[in-house]
Image 1: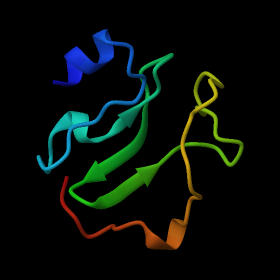
Image 2: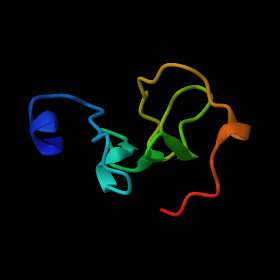
Image 3: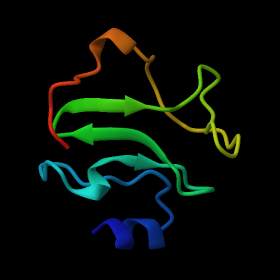
Image 4: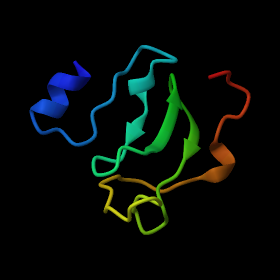
Length: 78
């Protein structure tokens, strides 16, 4: 499903309801770096800059909402 979505032009596909799967996270569509690491409904790592860019290549990242660092779950094994 992930590869079909990418082939169809979807820039930020991710697979839900499969905790621990690599593609439940969000990657930069330009350089492929991990931007948002998820485990189930939890965000374990958030690497989008405050300007909503990839920290590696500077590509503009289309995300909504705001980062709330104190809400990151650190007790989930992934």
